Length: 131
Image (cartoon, rainbow, N blue to C red; front, side, top):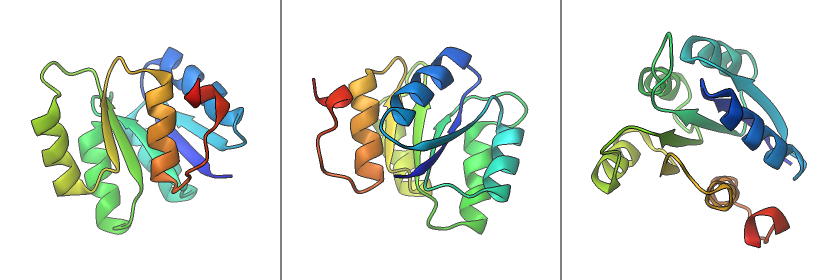
């Protein structure tokens, strides 16, 4: 399975995603802020990053921008609870930085699991996300 880095300052989201993804066999790393997330990815590049747009210390946008410079094939999913984080913002971000998917918060776990499978190139139905 894949290695995934979850970067979000909301510990409940990190735990929820960690539990769901580990139950599917993925190895999970996590971080509560952009600075630590950047350092973790540079030290241990993962197959996928799931990142909040608004983070303490270094925003998700700034962090992703820095990583894409050094890792142009970076595979990532962006999530955000920002008001107005709609289709236009998602498409602009996707085009500019190469996000595999953008999800507004709150999101359904099944929707995130489907996004993860797509980002990892998996097509099989995993029960937790297909019920």
